[in-house]
Image (cartoon, rainbow, N blue to C red; front, top):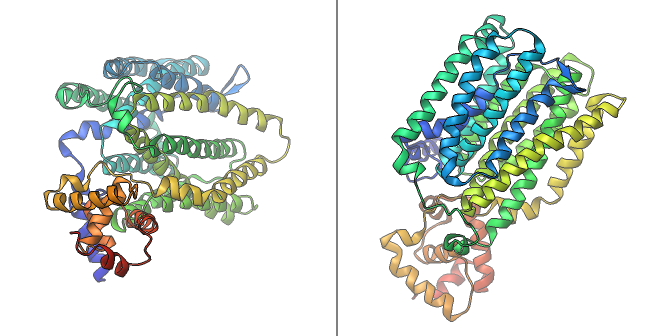
Length: 483
């Protein structure tokens, strides 16, 4: 019981990076803009069973969305906010036509146009999501999205009256709120957010980029690979859901809701790194898809819950990690490359899987399970590499020991050791070296620097190797007179 109360206390403390106290309430429009963009794009006003030019509605919906993201790959930074406002106005103008036009094909065409501008909105919102928010704000932003989807699958699909509201004035109300968000965002936060020149337009010529740690480009490449894994698995499920109807909405939505609660507990209360969430995603997705393969109602129900649990975890953590990697790169170039990757996934990867399903004559969930098994197995095989180079890396928002006056003298003294003995310590290793010599325990170091306990242990292990020691006793024996 005591440990529970101590965890809750840390959860509410403002110096802990992933705590509610670090959510900037005065920036609430900025905090909500990306989640509301995703939610708005999910409003569907047409028959999902329509096919045109040999393509299903699901595919026709993705193509214009991908084109919207592609636009952001070629837009200068200074035009992102004006483009967001323009695309928002276009979405609002197209919304009444979606409600009033009759006929499936004209309604689908109007919705495709809506999706194109919504793709632009999503790309612009993701720029703000990456560069202007803290980790805790990004994590809760993704949690809001999954919470919405959990309600969608548990309530919307179960009650026709809710569906009627969703397709009429409910959509108009959400669109009106989104307009308010975008224009409040531009008017109220223009000086502090939009005209911030800390982010360079030209990454190659930037001193900031030159000073970035070498790990950041590698981190970005890894997160793109993980995003491909997530998107491929998502494609598998979407085809199964539409073709075989073996995934039940209610347990799937409940699973997503459970994933939000679990992530808050793991990352915010117990301060564990995101590796745990990624493993949850792989394991529960694979197990859930395996269980739904059995021909029974109970298996479909339980498997749907597990898959919803895994999918919710994966959706939250992959975009949280993508945004963090882009922000750490301090590069607009990395952001534009990510927009291009999203376009490729929507426009081409979905098409490849579509062709595979169309040509496969057996049960869809067999090929889907096979692809998921291969992708998950590859992730498990390279897990040690991912843990070392990616998940245990520093994901903080920039708090360093040099910012704290009480450690300035100790840092100077340990820096002299670093230079004299040619230890080649990284910045984090240098900080942890200084704090260990001050007698700080790993948990205290994690709390002070706003990094996970696992990250501290990782850097401590590397530090011991460089110092050629095996224990804290050896550390104090060798350097006790330093600080």
